Length: 337
Ligand SMILES: C[S@@+](CC[C@H](N)C(=O)[O-])C[C@H]1O[C@@H](n2cnc3c(N)ncnc32)[C@H](O)[C@@H]1O
Image 1 (cartoon, helix red, strand yellow):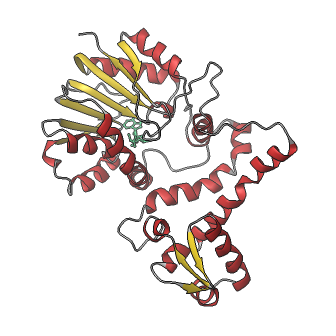
Image 2 (image 1 turned 120 degrees about the vertical axis):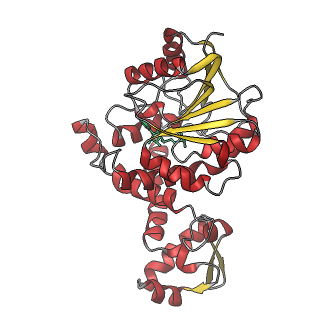
Image 3 (image 1 turned 90 degrees about the vertical axis):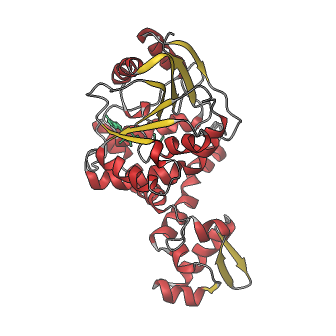
């Protein structure tokens, strides 16, 4: 993880000017450029005609997209890189459109930060419960996590786990990754009904779908039915306030079998001042923009809350560097046996 330390005008300029390449990419996405290019080479003149844009504008845009590796340039022709031809191409089966759209929309949302800091209120978004918004967001979460979930599942020790609850599991990407690796495991995905509808669609094509249960529930207001050997709670903590999270930890401990484990995955802060990793500090800004009370939290504070509720054996789980969702982003705690 890079640390940004701005001590000179040059460093200040470099950090501030970092919006330029993202802006170039957002424009390419707004023009559906990668989908138009698809699998063949294009001259600027032909591509400008197809996209109905100015030739000089497109020339400079494409040169920059080639400079950062999203396009390949040979002579006067441009084609997609293998990444852009698949992940960014709406006509390709590997397209991660829902997540790409979410990232694209952040450009406008982040432009409202000053107003959000002034008012303390999040940007005017659809209600979290609105089914249309929830469906789009849940697909985005699947497109975001499908690779990392497989990597994390490979490294998690679930040898003695018979039942797993994926709390706030959304599309169920993690639950299904765990099921793929453990033939005797049964998993329950708990989330809002609109999120579970997406999880069910994804599960239809999953070989372990018969070992999957769907639990529609508002876990901030209702107790969790059943008992589980492991509760997996990924990317939920940052949505809520410290008080709400402690109340959730209480609900979870009642749903764990004796000796059962809670594993939390989140953008934890690691240093004493609560500044790093950089990604975890910046993610708090997203929570300011999109939630009423969300934030990112230190590993130390989270461990303290878990201890206060009665959890034992609280410890971070180490994964191979670069394979996790977040740098040092896993914390485990157990219900006393
Ligand atoms: C950021 S997503 C994380 C999805 C998945 N766990 C992952 O790590 O990719 C958070 C999920 O928690 C769900 N969620 C948040 N608060 C909830 C609540 N009170 N009741 C049920 N689901 C909730 C959301 O609907 C969403 O699917």
